Length: 116
Length: 115
Image (tube, rainbow over all chains, first blue to last red; front, side):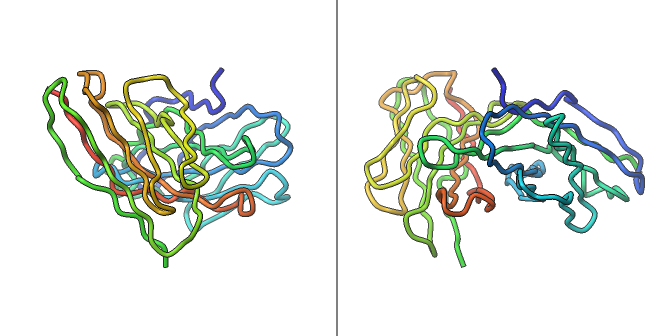
């Protein structure tokens, strides 16, 4: 079974508007970390934001915020004031304990296109 | 500061030829190391991970293998490439269990085309 599910293969947003990218996860570990990465067409993976399972507040990093709903096991990425440079693939990832180490598991990604 | 180097950036290989992709990390010790593969338009599939020298765990059965001859060196190999091995290969490193809230850091990736 998939541990990270991103149900939106593609999303479109108008420049300067906000957009939410969905991510749900599945784990039985009480302690885990959730991450979002951006992958532009160049292929590099750029870390955006992190949320720990015990964090009481939603993580924010500039225009990025993570809407963490632990009971629902969701960790949606919100990008405010979209810019043309935000057009990229976005991946949700989770680190959970496995054999004493933390293995990052990734979702299939969401392609975001920002229109001018 | 820590850096990760992965090479080559692009590779075109004939079917049946061998493969060797190399990844090295600087500025840290005893990192966890990972090899991922990304097929066109798909997510990242974990292939191998290593928590120490000589310790390799395989996630997906295939004709690829990995080795970690030194603490900060991770090598992905194949004796005979298949067409289905084409894809974008990413090496990454991360802290171990003592630092769960740190992200994985990625290399620039290798675009492999098997022809």
